[in-house]
Image (cartoon, rainbow, N blue to C red; front, side, top):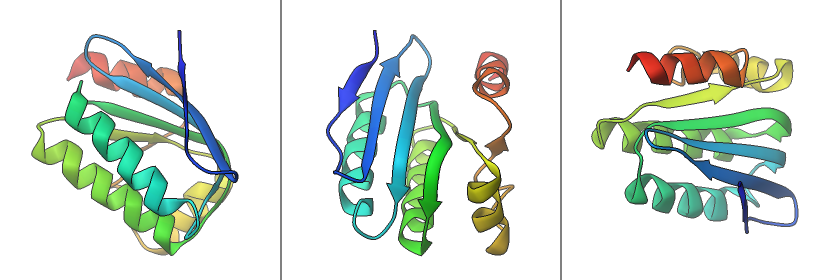
Length: 122
């Protein structure tokens, strides 16, 4: 059963923990307002494990540079923990990520199913 995450008024989500990955489904805005809480909550979850992280951002309406910075920090944190971050995206998120040429580093995926297959291969 997914647990509700207490993020911000503009960013909501759930967390589902399985044996070798965590799946976060987020909706709303990943911006300068929500980024500090988002970074802290997800970072703590990476510490708790499992280290493979799937962020479903397919229902995110907006990502700004603060949000991108948080995604990069989480990707680095997962790598340091010998895990992997994958981001399920939508056209708006993909466009923002491609503007700063981070699509390879942030491992953008078209669906949660594809991200889950990647986790199973790891």
